[in-house]
Length: 105
Image (cartoon, helix red, strand yellow):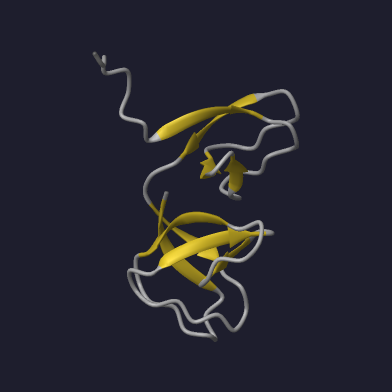
């Protein structure tokens, strides 16, 4: 049996480090986008669904629809040790682009 609880588009996170509004944070294997800044110990609602423009690694080419990974505050085109899958590229990003549109998680 399964009972519906919520849409699953947001997750409440208790900050273990200071969180900044709209600066992505990793929660387990999820990339979450805080809806406001939060100090250590505060709980903040974070988006875990939707399309966001996020910073990408310099010189990375990311094709539309490709899986995107997150490591050290940057979107990557290919997995590497310690990176998590954070979604798919909603639009292609050229090497010269600073950001990429990602449908997170």
